[in-house]
Length: 148
Image 1: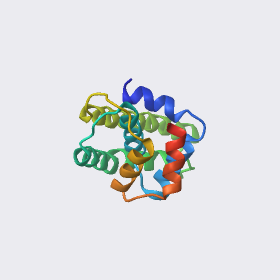
Image 2 (image 1 turned 45 degrees about the vertical axis):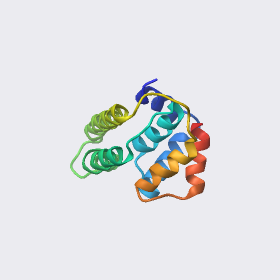
Image 3 (image 1 turned 135 degrees about the vertical axis):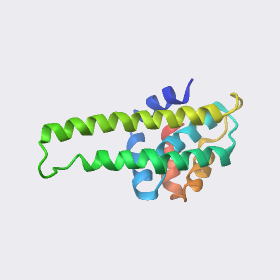
């Protein structure tokens, strides 16, 4: 199964989106990279971590995070802007942000090896989180449980 298809289904599971956004907002984690790490572990795919982390860090910092910030800013009223127009623009930005996350995940998948024996999701997520500065073990364990 492709990373994107798996990630869409996984993100819809109860508690996953909340756990991911909390790790993103409170601990600077990359949700696409965390989902990639979990998917790769479940698929048993080998990952060249240095290359994948570099791609995820660059894409997150230069593309995804600025789009997310713009989308979130457009959620609030802005002087001189009609609400309907602002909210319509917000939806457009949301679509572009979603597309950027998809492109990142497709790029990460292209870096992964062929499927093999599964690896522990908790270990993969811990390593992925550490690459982005770390996160509390309990939060990583919770996400691993939700994704396994």
